[in-house]
Length: 425
Image 1 (cartoon, helix red, strand yellow):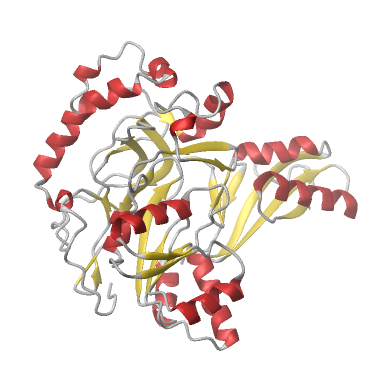
Image 2 (cartoon, one colour; image 1 turned 135 degrees about the vertical axis):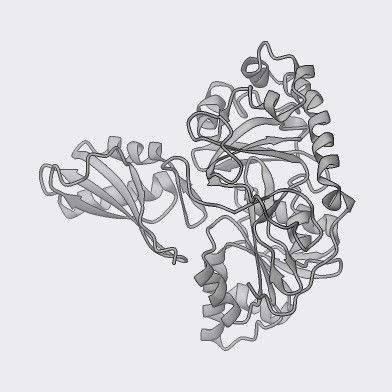
């Protein structure tokens, strides 16, 4: 895939170009200390009861440990506030505490580039002395602060734009001339369309680092055709931080996404925790070397696959690569950068006794998601009841949604609570 003339051959540090066998030895040698440090937290002490950390020094030994699922965090945290007993550092020793929908609480420690976001930013071409417009939300969730930490390590300036206020976003770009956008794909498209409407010159912004949403090839092409030729994608989450990111060489994106240097990533069979054969699609499970919030075999709910039988990446980075995000292992779905959980749909149904059965259907194309709750009802509700359900959708999911009423027996009896019918072409 051509990305004009961008040529990024250097790396953030020497860790990224290590011999793969050296990296593997280092990661496996660090595992016993990670296990023992994690066991100093009461939650991990319970999960890893009876485990001798000294014996966890290989991928096979790691695969014998239990899975802890992202989907379980809400219940774990409710039982032991605020982090389910999974943090080593006390709350007062952290720098920030975030609140994600659910609610799920996420910690941030005090170390430099705590989320390890400098690597994807550097790979995308962010350099010392640059200026970027940070359009991730600064409200409750950590994405914007991941960017802040990475920018501070690299040594570039940040416009803390956040999300929304599209006209101000366009004006800031036109006046301050940032070279890089960081945020969701859908919001960048909105900014570009608003700039066109305003007649504003935002041509300084030649580079974009995307996250929190899928980035289909059709949208990547649209960005190139509309003035942003260098488009990169990163894979991160509010609990783990950066996990993998795209790179380019000689103006061409390299296949797959390079893994971060501080994670051990497994691809497992959903529901079992058993590693799949190399190259097979499965659920991403991450073990994270983080002194404040160690995560041991943390199942993300995302699907991917390792790239195998390929040439080393031409960017010089030697770590393993994944194919990128290939869907969800469960029915949890991301809509406009926010996760929507089956439990939230059930919460809405419980609020309205007239609903016999419901399914949340997500349609539309990228940057234009439409969320509709299909409800089986015995009697046709009035406009007031419909409005109340719409309000419940917004209150529970923090997203706008519509409601559609169906006759009893209309929805398929297949156990689906959320169905993703979006066009990703």
